[in-house]
Length: 380
Image 1 (cartoon, rainbow, N blue to C red):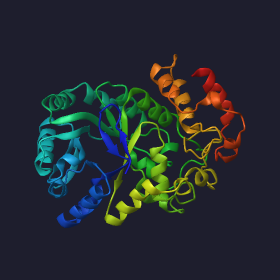
Image 2: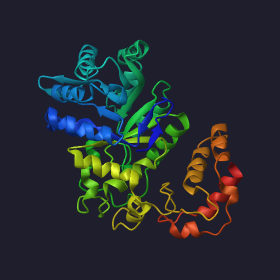
Image 3: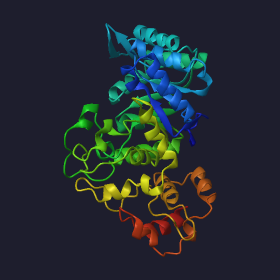
């Protein structure tokens, strides 16, 4: 298992994480079996947004002897009322539900205290400037949560979070299908049967979000990485082709600022299918060729997705990284010193490009790489 820094939190999280939602369907023994396999495979981060009491208790029992090995994303504002999940900002109920989470998870702290599920910009403003956020700050001051996070599906809200200053990481929905869609405040809009035939390429709001998070040191953990399994079925996929779990994971993990993909595991086999990513070949990870040749909604020509398909470079330039740093730099009026420093530390950079364009022949999206290397050399 490989590990990545989660923004500026100082936490090292596994590239593959555990999204707990599917565990609601299982009993104590089955939940423990899945979590034990996750631990054995090196997974060290889990998300528990669910308010249902039994699943919280089952997860707590499964990790009680290994609490220090787990980084927990625990949600603030996810409550259980009258036998059902209710998202609320009503502080009395919020506090009661969070205390219940701590008790059932058998812990006195949550690593990542998640402001639960905001997809509306007006609601974000209300939460951040009201008593809800004061409660979150209090939890952090007491050490009951170690870091402040938020979950959202809307890139406009997520961008507001990335610039807020106190929010250190975002749980965000990332996959190649959702990435083509404009911002919405209703997550169900992402699961429509078909998309507008004119869609193509990553929506600029999402592309900007990923770069903004990278620039600000705000880490991203991913939800909906498989689009609910829709991407595994050519008939259900908006692209008209099927992707594998490994390809979906590679797509998410090549977005700027992404540290971990929280995968929903129904059984140990699902864990093994996900962690196979760590030993997969480049051909097995290759989502780009599949999407570029898809019969519907292929990604835009000329748009770099940092997939790495252009490698290997004869002079050993990490082309995807140079492109990423160049794109980050162009967001600013002046190039940040941190980007220049990162660029300078590369074993080879754009100045080493010999203009052979062999990379361009391998690029599924026909990016003018040699020209971008020239521009990157001038800028950086």
